[in-house]
Length: 466
Length: 97
Image (cartoon, rainbow over the protein chains, first blue to last red):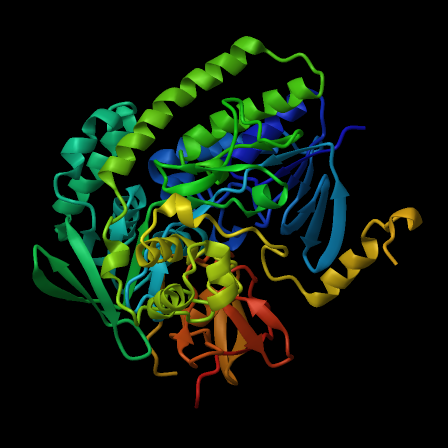
């Protein structure tokens, strides 16, 4: 019996599961959430359920189709919700299911781990009331609540205008949308964005509706600081050298998304620096094969292309997995999926032009800025470490300052820390490297670690070193 | 509690009430709430940081940032964004009375 596990039940993982079931396999679908859909199609708990159009807007049809696909898989997959893969050793997955430890030995593994918000912090970003754009959206979608009541959305990326529009529609008091991208970015990004005219049109629609609703929209903004006593009360920002302050009770901000790559790292995948995303990503071929035999990558966890591309990539990688298991697969379907992914990549390049990361962020960051939320490590401490020790590498910086060593394992700070290190050491982002993944990738109870140690494969006597 | 809630509920959703306590004060959440939602529709913070005793109220809401771990009277620690509210929970924010 062949055991195939899929980690992540978002659009990539669900499409992969459907393709594997169609080929006669019974995949294990592991996901941290109680309900499938990933973050993009996150489903509220039953008491807070609302109609798909209210939850997913223009994407309601896609969400419903994906849930129908999943419903049709009932009885044909081993779905393990509320389960965390916290370590991978070769082909063995270590799981935390609820509060129970388990291991799963797999023949093949599909990683569809998704993404989180990519954030470049500003002073005051740790104040209560300041959230990621994704968090603002989850509050609305999954919990039927709004951050606020008065809210400012800031940063850049497609989520910025989408979330602002969703809040406006839901009755939120959106005080301003502050985009850090330069004012001429839309003009320069247009050729790439036209690779997916439908999606570009949706973006234009959100902008137009926000303008009609009277929401102040500003581009070319520099975020200065969130201020308040025990709670955010205002956001200070600059535009063309002029100082502004907007009173608010909450802020949603972010600068696009970053891939969740820690499990690919633990699985032993090779990584390459991606110049478009300015981040290290697990290497994969066009079909989704990683550098490790039997390990496949799909969706935003392997590079940010969004939900539609994730569905295509999930199915494509599943076909590669099946082929490598010796099954015959529909080659024309595989080619068609690869062709469909092409405009998605061109569109992504357009998006990066539309929503670039502020290039001078590190140079502008104040020494007092908290970079690490977990342990309150500041930009000044990182710079002092570089100055005093000559450190030029992320893992060395981590060892010396504890940046990336806190509970989030660098998820929230690594984007910023790498930029500060490169700036302080006078080298490039690829040169500073990336934080190595460390198990457990998320906090697990010590009793679970003890169980895992007891389950560990014993070392044969002849290999013992005693 | 005189703090202004960070989260406001959408009108028109009818879910059953769930009783819990927050820093010893009787509160009511609703079915479907995460611990984070139940607490932040009442107040402004979930915890104080270990390093500077600064208030925090979570950040990512998707179980990634680990900034919303809360204490409860029974000694359990809960990740507020991913833990469903249960009746009778006795939650602590670290807030001084």
